[in-house]
Image (cartoon, rainbow, N blue to C red; front, side, top):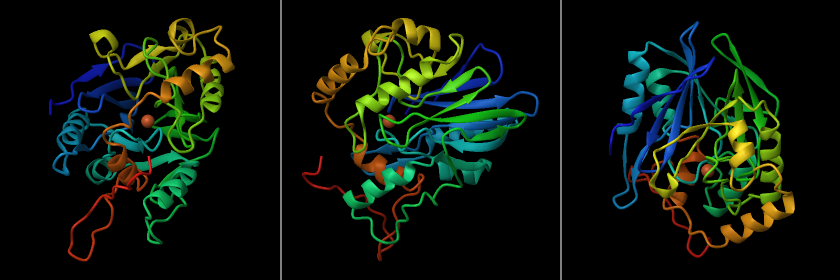
Length: 297
Ligand SMILES: [Fe+2]
């Protein structure tokens, strides 16, 4: 795997540096309060090879090395949602860098669904206790001297949140780049109508707000972009630009979702990410396993 290359955003506070994982098309963002050198890491990646079942910390190690080089103090390791296309490296980052892990409080809804699907057993708590902190809608927390507020933005999944700090907004999969649109809403608990309402809430923020994306798929072979703005999304987002009505969006989204294959890493990702990035517990032989539910998706 290529080492992730840092991309520096040219905005006001906070300083944001982004890393792109070309294997899973994931953007990991480091949100920095320059005054105190405290930071938060949003949506980190544990490398995983589905062919061999091997995990690797190459991407996480590159991120850790960069954070250490910059002499940053990690306050938070944040997730925007229980990702279905990459594994989180949150526990590995926490062990190396410190910080508290956190996600939206509706993660309990997601845990309940997937506990059933994966028959995870009584050892798997569905109260979100695998994370250090669960954020309700409107919760605020500090990154150094900056205040970050949490917006629940469900639709892609029931537990999706966006993080809003200074002029920067971290939207997870609630919005993609204007030329790619929005995320699918057909995973368990997803809802296109709910996504549309969440998007509307985000598009009401100031036009100059910097928007940081969790994924970029580089349509038409263009360069990777992990940053856009509320103004650009309002004007140009192919699925939700100004003038698109809810009914029109829901019809488009549902029709498109019906054509999409499952993400390659959905089964491994969900089983790990519903545990806040911990691998499933070892069986009696000391080996850890992922399950594949047959004929369930
Ligand atoms: Fe996602």
